[in-house]
Image (tube, rainbow, N blue to C red; front, side):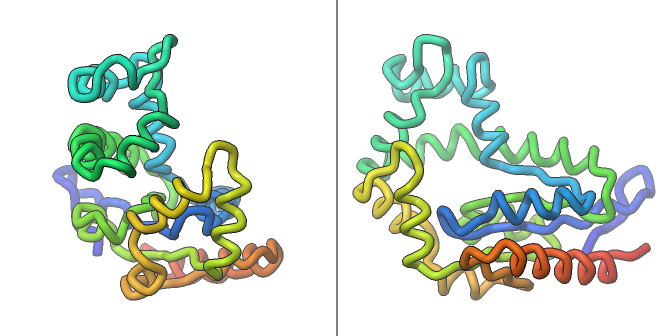
Length: 210
């Protein structure tokens, strides 16, 4: 649970929100945002640090070469995605560049949080020892595997082969559920999803009431 900071103020409780590709993490995060909860999306932070002039770009060029950076200075995400899922060592190299920068950005945003708790969206939370130890509770967005795959294939630029590589690189559904403190089921019913988010938010408000 949260401890006093150096200033004596209690640090804000942190919820880790995770789920497999196309499980609906972003939709769930938006529903919590609508309830006034501060949301920190690590994917969004990753896009910022790999955008034009981003903090990760110099190390990416040094490690992978200029061919992995587009003309306007941003990471060529499609090329990098295809590369790292073919070559596991390249994936590790990219993680070594990205993860410290993302962690630093997350901590900065947690320190700025104003809601009773803050939610950090971490797609690979199961795989991240840092985030598993950093968060106070873990909320998993779950959905049936056939629904997950159908949603993912509708996304632009993801082929069945790339999708299979992504799924294989992620924790299994069983593994994610094994670390969950709370689970939200997202099989496509927005009203049911909204009701679940409301119930989980009330639980967190009770848990973290000061």
